[in-house]
Image (cartoon, rainbow, N blue to C red):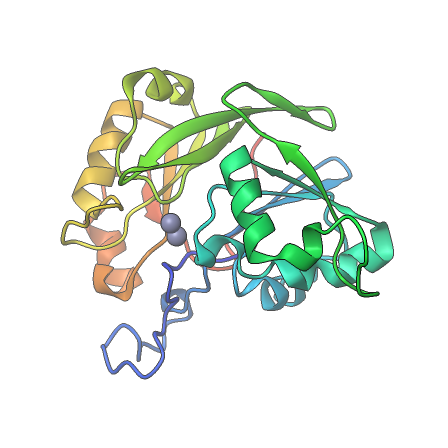
Length: 249
Ligand SMILES: [Zn+2]
Ligand SMILES: [Zn+2]
């Protein structure tokens, strides 16, 4: 749905060459993925581009939203779940208790038990801890990673794992990321950053985990042009781009 860092690409009023690029793959909305299996569709994160992402991908139902953490680029679109709520009823949301508490402060009108203004979005809260949980017929394994000093959750679905906003991963969490067919992980830019992996750090984690294939996301314009950066990557490591679809069997 989106592969860009918090400001997206292009950045407003930027004349950086990547922001001016005509390559479609250099246009990145804020990070999110849609995961579909059987008759189910779940979204990970619901940032400020959520509405347009749903329209662009022609999504006509989602069964729930799973959150990685509470930063605005991952949660700011929550009000825009309304069309789904009107059609399907209250939206199940899955997040760590700290993130649910933060969402309650950011969107008090969504979480109020009574005196609701008609037409506000409704949600059903599900607290995700460090233990695997069920989504329909799927077991989802939360992976706790560190985003600077903030713990953030990544998620593993069978042989696929999605991690964003990672800076470091403890050895016991890395154990949960072995034998993957596909890993999605963030890399912000070439230079280092206090709370995000840069490209070199991401590649070193990929080298340790050895997934069959890896796609890089949460990308800043400072990483460079999609086409140029991708040429420098090791075999089986790719930059993700908006509207990329991956099939996992
Ligand atoms: Zn982010
Ligand atoms: Zn973040």
